Length: 319
Image 1: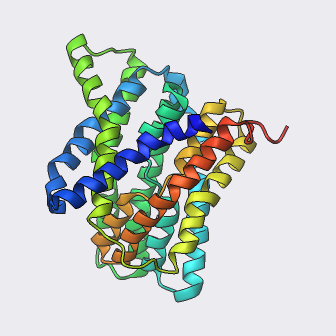
Image 2: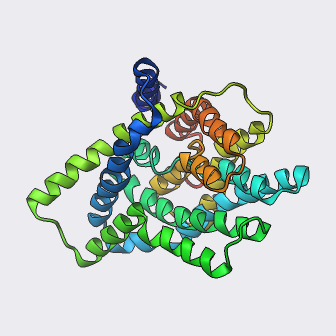
């Protein structure tokens, strides 16, 4: 257990330091602009490219694994959407709630924690899950808002907007370039490789620090009751469904199964708040879901890592 605490304490400690510094310095949230730009356009893309470009190409085309991980996410999405829809029959609100219960912080938290927990073998499943889940997430939100009839855009405008978000997202561009480099077996020159290494090493600490600052600058006055099913689905049900599906449908390496399960166990992504702001739907509670699930995940992620490391969750439970 001490090994698990030693693993997660520095990780969540960076979030705590971000919150502490934000409270002490009283800087406005707009001050994060350039830091977010650095993380989004340089540090995390460099990390994805570097890891994928060094991976054998055949490992990057495991469609069964991709479909299993995405299916787990959207089973949880459907469950939360149904729970919300039964209550208020509101498609936009139900969509944001469903995203809060299924869209984990796989960009900012995923790579750093997975690589710390499982080593460089976790790089490929992290990148695959990130690229394909985000592509689906980018499509689902505008599609559901269009279905609700509250957006005045045509279907062509929705499709164009979705395609643009997917094609031009820096993480997905970096993933595609990494896959291409792996296929061509191309290695960057030493100077460029060193610079990519600098950027990649900065990705996790900077992303976690920014997350802590963001949480501190969006204080929570009270915990809404409807965050309970979101928190349970996101932090407990999602990783268990992911584990059940992946262990049932394929003979994947244990690291891939555990990495996918860990990513499924991560708290609500800050992008859910961004999407809520974009559509003016459930904004304050979307922010609250990020804060609440992040705090609770300190315990749940620690418990899941302990269950994995202690052998409580075997890689082949069905045999």
